[in-house]
Length: 376
Image (cartoon, rainbow, N blue to C red; front, top):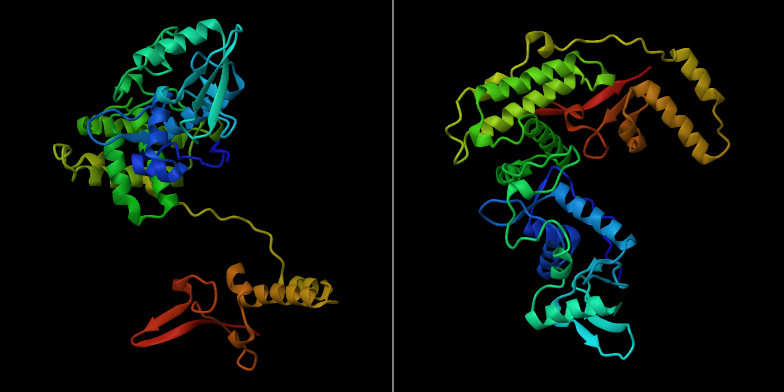
């Protein structure tokens, strides 16, 4: 069974707990521990281990590249899952041979499949030393590199880089707490919030949120205003996007002030994200749209083919779209019982049609009326 995890795509701005990673990749805790020994790094700080999505992506991208390269000392390539791994030292067994090359057998820590590797004299001696001293197989290769692997949780300075070139892990724990709070939102909304929070964090150079000042928030506001004045080619954003980003950051800061360890933040710190009135004002842009007149629509319907049932259905749907003004979702679920030909009415019933609830019924006192469209 292949476990290349090609179809698993962690969200780079999200923070994952151990259980989240196990569920996302469908692995056990031993596999996650083996990943850490192979280079996966968790967010620093006290408390349960957390992993940023960007680091999970970086780790697996690096694994894919390692499969194509030359194996390091102590590394085995598993033909079962296709990964390059350092097996557990207790599973390694060297088969004696009189020839220059001998064979080492072990068990893949990811999928449990047997792995085999032919060893030269130098690598054989190194692995034998690991077996005698009960040290990890990654130790011989680490001794050749510039940075020795550490034991335990890493500090922020050794954390991996994000696509922007920098990594800030000091705020990951509070962002993880916000993710739990934000479970009431849709996944798309949560991702929008996380993107804006990470942009805010990066603009401040990874400064811990508990040390935020009004000047920090004001600088973020000024950068948003500058983006509104820049052209799209220069990375500028629309006023709607800037208003949405400022609104979400204000809500995040108001939530942040209520958390333990962040109550010392100024009560009005979120107010420093308020935009100028000119940018807050919503300008209605009148777009000149070309649309067919009713006479042209009638001519188009009559010119449509109607030889078979499917073509007649398509013809009827186009006609209903012009006559009733229903959305595509409502049209595809429209039935004859929703039409009153004598009264020339079309009823949009959300209990039977795919329609927005607010556009399906009208409440007048204790009387509920279904949305109705008259046509001539």
